[in-house]
Length: 212
Picture 1: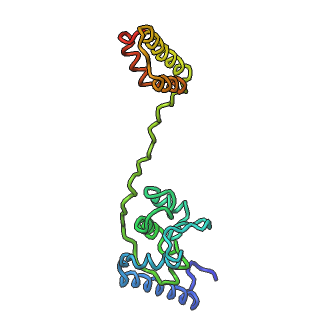
Picture 2: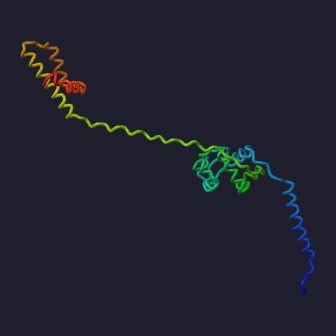
């Protein structure tokens, strides 16, 4: 049709009416609905029951973890890393705190199947959850290196101590004194077993008095 203006057809008027009516209804819906109430814990518990049978620590290897089945990218992207590396290692409250952020950004469509099945429509609310206390890593104190067996030193100590004792026994016998056989047997047994380190130390400290 020629001319600057074209007569609006019936079809055009109908489409316009539908568009305007739809806009009015949509605006009225928003006006009457107002702000949705915050999602209560019961909503999150119901959602977890649907998503993971209520197991907040679940990780089946399907790429989603925790009671609300976060993907690793969603978990870290919405601040879950402050609580744990993956959702299944975080507490229920920590998972809900992160889920509230996801709800605020994506709506219940982040959990499309279960939220539709449960009819969830509540709004997000900002939450905080205590971070896990820092676990101090136990670092064992290195034990002092064990001294290598000092066979040679022990042998030298025995020779030194029992050498001095032998000299003392010979000196006593030279003066005509007799030593009971039982004492000599005990002495010879001690020589075979080796000298006690404490005895060697005692000798070292008093060898000037005992003699060599």
